[in-house]
Length: 319
Image (cartoon, rainbow, N blue to C red; front, side):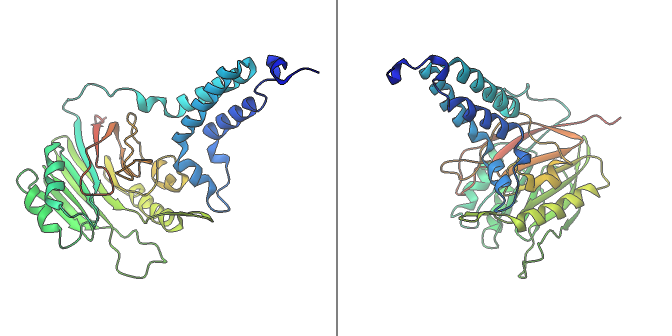
C-alpha cells in the first residue's frame, strides 16, 4: 500500500483546486449570490477585497503541495482578484492641473472630544471642499471657528455640512429618511459649488448604519435611504455632480447600486476608512458624475472612529 506521501502529484491538493475556482467565481460573480436570507450577497460584497487573503493562502498551499492542477486553479483566482481590485493598487496620476478639485470626506463622530483639532487637521490637508457628518450642536461652533479662515463658505443642515473655498448657492436639506424612522432625522444636503471650473452640484449624506448579526446583514434602512439619494442624483439638472458621505457601505455592496449605477467611483486607492483603529472597509465615499475620482487616500486618524478620506477629482471638459 502506498504511503500518503507517495500519492501522485496530480492527486495532491485535490481540495485546493475547487476552493480556488470557488474563490474566483465569488470574486467575478458576486452579484449572483442571493441577498436572501440575511442579505448574504451584500455581506460578501462588503468584505470582497479580503478574499485576496484567501487567494494568498491558496497560492502558498499550492506551492507547498507542488500540485500543478491546483496552481493553475489558484492562478485563476489571482487573475479574478487582480481584475476586480488590482487597479486600486496602482499609483495615481501626477497631481495638479486646472481641471482638478480636491475634496475631503469625514464622519467626525458625535463622540469626538477634540473637534477643533479634527477641523485643523482636515484644513491642513488643503482640500477645496470638506464634507462632514455627525456634526452635533455642541461641536459645530468649533468647526465653524477653526475652518472659517480657509473656508469662508459653508452650509450645515441637521448633522451634515459642507465647507468650501468657493461660493455656495441653493443649499437645502435633502429628505432621505427611511419610512421606519419616526424621530427627527436630517442627514443629507444638496448645494451648488461655484468653482472656477464651473457649477457643481454637491450632495453630502450620511446613510443609516448597518449591523452584522446572527441573521446576517441588517441594511434595509441603508438600502432605502440609498434609493432616495440615488433618485435625487438622477433628477439633478446640473451636469457635474459630487456625492460625499458616510454611506455605510462599500462600492461593491449592491445596496449602494442606486448610486454606483449612476456615479463613478475611485479608480485608484483602497482608502479603508472604518474602524479607524484597524480599518477593514471603506464606507466613506466620494463619487462623481461628469468627473473622475482619480485617487482616494486616507488621512491620519482624528478623534473619530472613522479615518478621513481625501479625493483627487478630475472634472471633465464640457463638450
